[in-house]
Length: 624
Image (cartoon, rainbow, N blue to C red; front, side, top):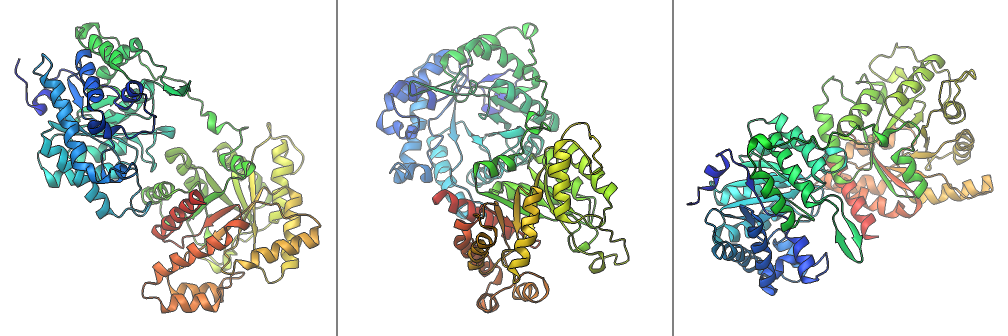
């Protein structure tokens, strides 16, 4: 049988079986470490690579992937082989082609495997877009030159990087067939927080011939992701390549639990969901592929959809009595980075959700949702916080001002917040209505922040309201308070703080400080007054300045903030004030890092700048 062109084969209606894991097999066959540079074996130990290809062909695979997943210049440089990109990729193609030539089949396809660069791109990493494009172009040029039948982009947890790689390929060869596979993790979201439907739409619009999902989880998880992608783009051609379950280390080796028989059943399920290209990822072996081959060769009438992945999910992570992620981080002493987001003066949330995804991709652990900041009319902070948690899986800290709420509404709002899963609260007085859009609006204030903290921590978290009546079940709020460690009247600030601590405050959000030495001054004075060490976790505000005008406004019109003359002069003289403001934020964080337990980024509406600062902080913590 003569071989059909690859696109024609895809459109034939008959499932196409890819091979399984390459790294797993090389790890097992060569005794190499799991973190070894397997791509270099194309040159260093080609016989082992060739034997793996032949084993997959013998198992019945129709598509053979080259051993080039990590053969880009950035990853190869980590093993001292950065100058061998062309050689390693070319040899990878030649070995796969040799295995095909030595088989007795003439219906096989060789596809070039391409994975992520392993280094984040701007603004979430050190690589510029041009550098990323150059790295992909170098590898893709080598694979195309060696004569692959298609390119397979796989295990991309950041689908924007995948889209970038596809664009580079299209510039090199406008007609090369493309298989584009994304990877999803927590709550079926990409690393940057995109759901399968959005990723599927973007990949389909990119012109990829096949879109799909690989790695990340076992067959059950991949089946659910495939369903969501196909529902979003029913006309696309799909692929599914799961791991063999979740790995465990036994005797120094990484082992996967899913059996070959289980994978045979999974192959039929994937076909029923709508996959055309089926294979295996981490942990799969020729045995798994042979079992899938046998299942796919059965008459269609005998296929059985096992409905794998239909699990009754009760959202254990959001159980009402379980600690929030913030509470766990505070308890473990983990440095926490959160960014403040203000709701929009609109009912549209797409832009805000997109910004939140970018912030999480940059490394933000949580999002703080402000409630009517500056007494300006905005969408309800509850709605925004709920959307962030339910749609993106990003845990939030809900700002809970006492202004504008009488005692009845305060308690009702607390119950509603808990019911929506919003269990991290930042209790604050709030801005007076006279400064905002509606200065004549009611400015009722029945309870002070310190008192409200007590109501929550000593009342509701014990199962009773302010009147001592049962609320049915204790709540489980984690409560933060406001703190200005740079206050001129330190004695008053300490007195108020001690009231909040006595009420049960779990953490504090610190007012922005542009003179970090004030933190030590405050802590020393607190210890003198209280007779004990200052132990409250403080997430200190870092406010990236973006103009001289903003800096002057903060210094002159915002109570509690003082911007030193040196910083005012520096940003005023800067050719690029926004960039200078970012550098100042970096320097302030470096000087504060050892005295605080977290950073609270206040973007001032510029989320690009906030993402830059978050990425810098996260990188600094890793390097520390």
